[in-house]
Amino acid sequence: LTGNIILVLGIRKYDPSPDFQEKIAPDSLIFPNQVISEIQTLIPSSIPANWKLSPVLEVAWKELVSTALTDSEISNDEKDLISNILSNLTEYAKILEEAVADNVITPDEQKNLTETRKKIWNKAFKQAFDRDGLSHEENELLFKLIKILKSLENFPK
Image 1: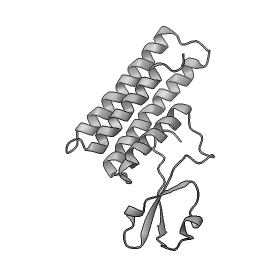
Image 2 (image 1 turned 90 degrees about the vertical axis):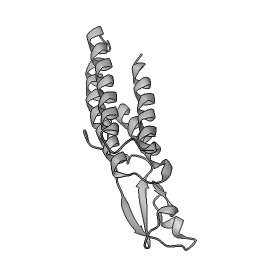
Image 3 (image 1 turned 180 degrees about the horizontal axis):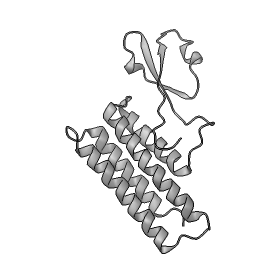
Image 4 (image 1 turned 135 degrees about the horizontal axis):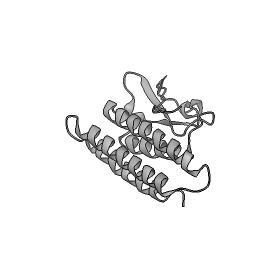
């Protein structure tokens, strides 16, 4: 699963009974404030075990989705931004995998990794600002991306 965001949404009828929580799969987050017309949105809180992602993408996916969900919903702009960030991080993960294959990261490989991180930032920044202005949520996603990219500077060392 490369190049695309993995975001699964499901719809379930809202049931206010006490045993409602027992009917919910444990890998789902419930947002009661999103109950609209007897429906409730379920979003997985973790990546299902059968989805294999590189460690870079798995960490980024979890961090970005949890950041986007701070207001209990993911807008289309947020979804597009996350999708594009993950698509660009897929390229980075491939370059990193090739670089560590021989257990040595050469200066050229390190330069390529650094340039790719800069490209990821520039593309995300441009996308976020090319719209009708930067929303608070998009701003938070950009801050999270900075943290992710900073953590990648020291990986693997």
